[in-house]
Length: 539
Ligand code: ADP
Image (cartoon, rainbow, N blue to C red):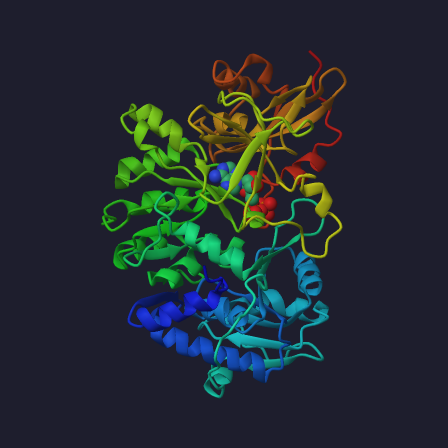
């Protein structure tokens, strides 16, 4: 067989040649902008010319600091298809983390949406290798007058207007195409470099029917940001198959997203649970009949949320699991046809799992020390470890890599899960968050889900507190809904019968808010340091 390289130029060429009329819609501050793959491809080629004109090294890192837009999609392709490496800066990282990753990746140029100028400008002088700053005018935000010393400031459209379109060619499929950093709950973020080949294979996997099934007839709304974990591969997949794309831009309000779904006849809308929690009430009275899938992941997807969507739109949520290190999609929760006749209760239960590994991904759930597989009983938990052609082999220039990979080459995900007799995996917790009590594990996630099921609770997070006899015992940190009052006794009474007796938290504290990470997940690290010296009541 022939051995043509699996590179992103193939996806680019297809969109340019076969789907020039298909639309990319971007929501902006002043309304929706419409373009086509034909125009996008022409501009992307000229963007390749811009990178040459700016003198970006043949394998230079090209950083972006932007929302989901058609311009960002130009940047998804011009750097890799011209041999360079796209580095999407996560706009929600803390300033010192942004400085760290821009310097660690040695970014040469950064493309910034004007609406985000305010956020990044104070950091520019800390970006040691950046020589060019290109502002993409998205119609709102500050007009910058100068970049930091040693950096040239440019306007995107002016550069594009004067640039020559280039021919794209990448000979080696193992060449780097892009990179992302994890949002780093401990220490500095860690870099993951994706090759053309890994991105190619991940894209095809996202297009298989048993995963998200992206296809030409879809209109895809990636609410999930292009600056975090590759927008779950949906931007690449849309280009590869010529699907319509709806880019939400900066306005991620529930109302705006609901309007895009209805008015642009979106078929696939993907986002994290908090997005779908917000959008749900906004769907009242709207026509959502175009939707065929609502992929959701990034943190636990409450069963009640999926059921609420099923009741309102006829479409339950499609749960997916993955991480920056896994490109990111590694498993998706479809119902097997052999289980399709189960009761609605059982089906909802299956949907609350993270499903099965995608074709191409090997997953094992093992005791993290002995690496022996846990029984497929849906009860015994262990760490999920994965391997495959779009799973990271190491972190970029980072001596922390060995801790995250086993000697036999599997990625240690740090996620604790069970697997049942049908092969469905369920996330119990993250390894660092489980409460290790007397040699047994208590799932903080499960306790939180139960506590958050209480009608007076807005948010709840559970952490392990040092205990002289048991090693650790759970402490529940609860945020009460505005205008409500709640006592420790009520919380514990609510949990009784819902969880094993020995799981009941030793204490309940009421806090104003659960601290969040840069991407909006509960920051257990911050909670743990806040309650480091907390004295649990003695029985
Ligand atoms: P970060 O570590 O920066 O949060 P990622 O965005 O890569 O990085 O997040 C990956 C993690 O998100 C996974 O390891 C897992 O803990 C969590 N996660 C992803 N999908 C799900 C899901 N469907 N259910 C529960 N947790 C999930």
